[in-house]
Length: 289
Image (tube, rainbow, N blue to C red):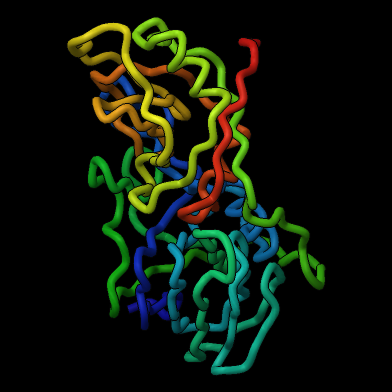
């Protein structure tokens, strides 16, 4: 077995392999997937000396513990968290050299939800449809990591960044999502449309990689019944029968039968990936470009 590998000592609540995803396959029913906080994933790759699209690990809330079988450069970013090597604190959001056999512990998030771990050479699991990303909805890509999983690593291709600490945006204290009218806004009463962009919501604990769920005022429909299934996009805000909006994230279904009241601008979605349950959410209406 190759010595360029990474053993998972503690998988944490949910740790997956992610890269830029597999766009362009929606007609086959395949979501884009990929890192929810794409800027954070790209930055840790840069810090570790990897190209932006190299596969990284995405942790959820509780971090993970890893043991490389070879000396590697590692960078941890995204949600701020404590990072140690063999029990000694090391910098977050900076390149760190980890000796072969040492234990790298990525701790629980101090704020935010998802931390990203880049390892020099990138995680080299087998690609599916051009991506190494785990897709929780379709089941494509490697399964979520489990204790004892061994991940192959690529060969380092560049030098790590020469920085002490890289700047990263803080997780949002309030999540402001710019939204354009959706194709089925007319399925809701005028009062519901106004409430959607004027009332306060909060991030629900039921959120996941498929969608950001919120709690708040239920949106009343003007039309009864259901739609035939139609295509949906990243950022679409679908409203199921309970009236609670759901913002589609990277592992979203490519079709759906619930009406879409709006679509969130793509640049606002990385912040949604870091919004902890209870975070205030405001949908801000903007014009179509």
